[in-house]
Length: 199
Image (cartoon, rainbow, N blue to C red; front, side, top):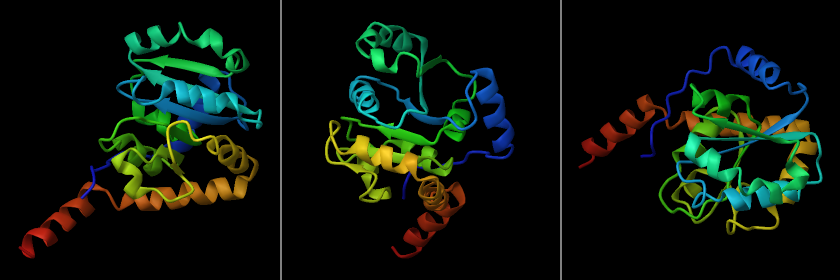
């Protein structure tokens, strides 16, 4: 039984349009998202390194967290000159789930072992996900989405390939949503009751 996901994804198109307008983003621009409770152990440096190695050019990066984390991150951003025009920093956003809804890719090169619930959220919100196999949430992703380590050099190539193939991008998004729906509260309760009745 995995953590339960219960996100309202009604008005998805309106949320996307409003977000793109608010941050002055072209509608054909792809969005790569990072958020975590602890930026450092969740791989913010590795995230930025991977994004710096992308050949695909029409993308923006959303990094969201609390004011303190965003504030301290700003000191290390000058190293990433190539990404300067692409980074959107968001602190204390009122509805975090919306950031998953507007994004195309959720990349989490984490060093943490405990199950990253954000992976399920991202999948539910139709994101393509990439996750380090150090994390327990590796159980819900396929081989393509797995990173052998937080510094896995192949991930930039995988992201490039997926961003260049719109059909495959949409296909994976739909598959991820279907998988994550199996972790709804209702389905988890059903599984829990089945386990209890088997005792």
